[in-house]
Length: 139
Image (tube, rainbow, N blue to C red; front, side, top):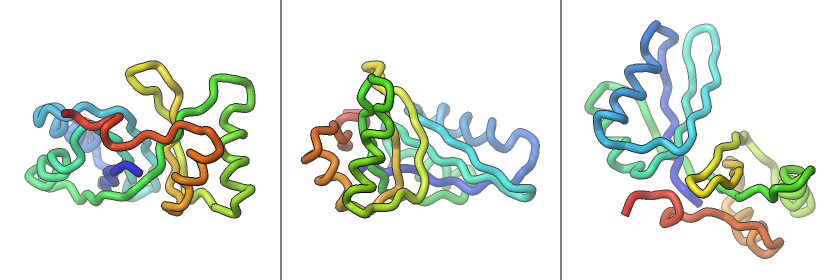
C-alpha cells in the first residue's frame, strides 16, 4: 500500500492554489489529486513522490493534513478493465471506501482505492499489478 495525503481545506478563494503552490515550492511532484467538497470545506486526496516531505511542507503552511494507506492498482487497458479490478475485490467480500483514477509516468491507468490491507495480496494473486512505494516515491 502507498501513502495518500488527505488535506482538509476551508472553502475559501485561492486555498487550493495555495495548497498546490506549497507542494510545488517544496519540490513535491503530485501524481494524483482528487477533490470532494461540501458547502464549508473540501477534502483533497493527493498521491505524491514524497509523502513525509509533503506533510512537513503542508504543516509549515498551516494546512491540516494526514496520511492514509491506499492500494494503487494498474487497470488493464481493455474494455471493462476497471470492472475486473473491482470484481476481484467483490469476490473476496472487500468493500471500497472511495477511489479515484490517475495515470503513471509510464502511461498506465491506475486506480487508488481505500480498502482493507488484505486487498493487496488478493489483487496480486489475481494477476493485477499493485504499485508499491518504490514505484511512485522519489529515490
